Image (cartoon, rainbow, N blue to C red):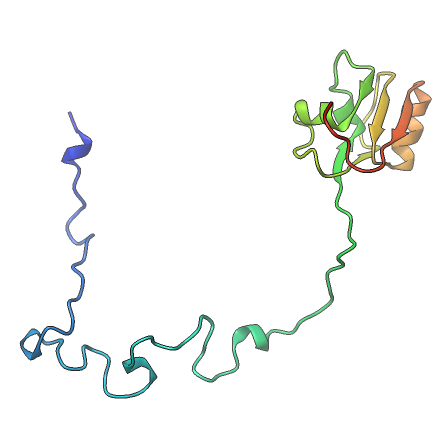
Length: 154
Protein backbone atom coordinates (compact mmCIF):
# COMPACT_ATOMS: atom_id res chain seq x y z
CA UNK A 1 0.00 0.00 0.00
CA UNK A 2 1.27 3.47 -0.88
CA UNK A 3 1.86 5.81 2.06
CA UNK A 4 2.43 9.56 2.18
CA UNK A 5 5.88 8.95 3.63
CA UNK A 6 6.80 6.87 0.54
CA UNK A 7 5.99 9.64 -1.97
CA UNK A 8 8.94 11.17 -3.81
CA UNK A 9 9.14 13.91 -6.41
CA UNK A 10 9.97 12.60 -9.91
CA UNK A 11 13.58 12.95 -11.06
CA UNK A 12 14.30 16.47 -12.33
CA UNK A 13 11.31 18.02 -10.58
CA UNK A 14 13.43 19.55 -7.83
CA UNK A 15 16.40 21.68 -8.89
CA UNK A 16 19.30 22.46 -6.60
CA UNK A 17 19.63 26.10 -5.60
CA UNK A 18 22.54 27.96 -7.25
CA UNK A 19 25.10 28.72 -4.56
CA UNK A 20 26.95 31.94 -5.40
CA UNK A 21 29.70 34.00 -3.85
CA UNK A 22 31.76 31.06 -2.51
CA UNK A 23 35.11 31.71 -4.17
CA UNK A 24 36.56 31.56 -7.67
CA UNK A 25 36.78 27.75 -7.66
CA UNK A 26 33.00 27.43 -7.57
CA UNK A 27 32.55 29.15 -10.92
CA UNK A 28 30.21 31.65 -9.27
CA UNK A 29 32.74 33.73 -7.32
CA UNK A 30 33.84 37.36 -7.41
CA UNK A 31 30.82 39.16 -8.92
CA UNK A 32 28.47 36.24 -8.08
CA UNK A 33 26.86 36.13 -11.55
CA UNK A 34 25.81 39.79 -11.39
CA UNK A 35 28.36 41.26 -13.78
CA UNK A 36 30.42 44.41 -13.18
CA UNK A 37 28.95 47.70 -11.99
CA UNK A 38 25.48 49.03 -12.71
CA UNK A 39 22.18 49.00 -10.88
CA UNK A 40 21.70 45.24 -10.91
CA UNK A 41 25.14 44.51 -9.44
CA UNK A 42 24.35 46.46 -6.27
CA UNK A 43 22.61 45.09 -3.22
CA UNK A 44 19.00 46.08 -2.89
CA UNK A 45 18.43 45.87 -6.67
CA UNK A 46 16.54 49.16 -6.84
CA UNK A 47 13.86 48.34 -9.41
CA UNK A 48 10.21 48.61 -8.52
CA UNK A 49 7.53 46.28 -9.90
CA UNK A 50 6.47 47.37 -13.39
CA UNK A 51 9.81 49.05 -14.15
CA UNK A 52 10.74 48.51 -17.80
CA UNK A 53 14.28 49.86 -18.01
CA UNK A 54 13.33 53.45 -18.77
CA UNK A 55 10.80 52.49 -21.46
CA UNK A 56 7.35 53.99 -20.86
CA UNK A 57 5.64 51.45 -18.55
CA UNK A 58 2.64 49.52 -19.88
CA UNK A 59 0.28 51.00 -17.30
CA UNK A 60 1.09 54.49 -18.61
CA UNK A 61 0.92 53.48 -22.30
CA UNK A 62 -2.61 52.06 -22.13
CA UNK A 63 -5.28 54.71 -22.71
CA UNK A 64 -7.58 55.53 -19.81
CA UNK A 65 -11.26 55.89 -20.70
CA UNK A 66 -14.36 56.80 -18.77
CA UNK A 67 -14.67 56.85 -15.02
CA UNK A 68 -16.28 54.89 -12.19
CA UNK A 69 -18.97 56.71 -10.27
CA UNK A 70 -18.60 56.54 -6.51
CA UNK A 71 -22.38 56.97 -6.21
CA UNK A 72 -23.28 53.84 -8.21
CA UNK A 73 -25.83 51.65 -6.43
CA UNK A 74 -25.46 47.89 -6.69
CA UNK A 75 -28.52 45.66 -6.31
CA UNK A 76 -29.06 41.94 -5.95
CA UNK A 77 -31.63 40.84 -8.51
CA UNK A 78 -34.58 38.60 -7.62
CA UNK A 79 -37.12 37.55 -10.24
CA UNK A 80 -40.77 36.66 -9.67
CA UNK A 81 -40.03 33.04 -10.50
CA UNK A 82 -37.58 33.04 -7.55
CA UNK A 83 -40.24 34.46 -5.22
CA UNK A 84 -42.52 31.62 -6.25
CA UNK A 85 -40.06 29.22 -4.56
CA UNK A 86 -40.90 30.71 -1.13
CA UNK A 87 -43.19 28.01 0.25
CA UNK A 88 -45.51 28.58 3.25
CA UNK A 89 -44.71 32.30 3.43
CA UNK A 90 -47.07 35.23 3.15
CA UNK A 91 -44.38 37.86 3.64
CA UNK A 92 -41.02 37.71 1.88
CA UNK A 93 -38.09 39.85 3.11
CA UNK A 94 -34.43 40.03 2.04
CA UNK A 95 -33.45 38.08 5.19
CA UNK A 96 -35.75 35.21 4.23
CA UNK A 97 -34.40 35.29 0.66
CA UNK A 98 -30.88 34.99 2.07
CA UNK A 99 -31.92 31.99 4.19
CA UNK A 100 -33.36 30.31 1.09
CA UNK A 101 -30.11 31.15 -0.78
CA UNK A 102 -31.95 33.13 -3.45
CA UNK A 103 -29.67 36.09 -2.66
CA UNK A 104 -26.12 35.81 -1.39
CA UNK A 105 -25.50 38.83 0.81
CA UNK A 106 -27.78 40.47 3.36
CA UNK A 107 -26.09 43.88 3.31
CA UNK A 108 -26.70 44.70 -0.39
CA UNK A 109 -30.12 46.07 -1.46
CA UNK A 110 -32.57 43.84 -3.34
CA UNK A 111 -34.42 44.68 -6.55
CA UNK A 112 -37.38 42.55 -7.68
CA UNK A 113 -37.74 42.12 -11.45
CA UNK A 114 -40.73 40.78 -13.38
CA UNK A 115 -39.24 37.74 -15.12
CA UNK A 116 -41.26 34.54 -14.78
CA UNK A 117 -44.68 33.91 -13.25
CA UNK A 118 -45.86 34.38 -9.70
CA UNK A 119 -48.67 32.09 -8.56
CA UNK A 120 -49.05 33.11 -4.91
CA UNK A 121 -50.48 36.07 -3.03
CA UNK A 122 -47.41 37.55 -1.31
CA UNK A 123 -46.37 40.64 0.57
CA UNK A 124 -42.89 41.41 -0.73
CA UNK A 125 -40.45 43.70 1.07
CA UNK A 126 -37.53 44.92 -1.06
CA UNK A 127 -35.57 48.06 -1.83
CA UNK A 128 -36.77 48.46 -5.44
CA UNK A 129 -39.33 46.93 -7.79
CA UNK A 130 -39.60 46.99 -11.56
CA UNK A 131 -42.92 48.18 -12.97
CA UNK A 132 -43.83 44.74 -14.32
CA UNK A 133 -42.99 42.99 -11.02
CA UNK A 134 -45.10 45.49 -9.10
CA UNK A 135 -48.06 44.98 -11.45
CA UNK A 136 -47.88 41.18 -11.25
CA UNK A 137 -47.63 41.08 -7.44
CA UNK A 138 -50.57 43.46 -7.04
CA UNK A 139 -52.63 41.61 -9.71
CA UNK A 140 -52.58 38.51 -7.49
CA UNK A 141 -53.74 40.52 -4.46
CA UNK A 142 -50.26 40.86 -2.97
CA UNK A 143 -48.61 43.98 -1.60
CA UNK A 144 -45.22 45.58 -2.06
CA UNK A 145 -43.34 47.39 0.67
CA UNK A 146 -40.28 49.44 -0.15
CA UNK A 147 -37.44 49.19 2.36
CA UNK A 148 -35.26 52.24 2.94
CA UNK A 149 -31.76 51.31 4.08
CA UNK A 150 -30.57 47.78 4.88
CA UNK A 151 -32.95 45.65 6.94
CA UNK A 152 -31.35 44.23 10.09
CA UNK A 153 -31.95 40.74 11.46
CA UNK A 154 -34.35 40.65 14.41
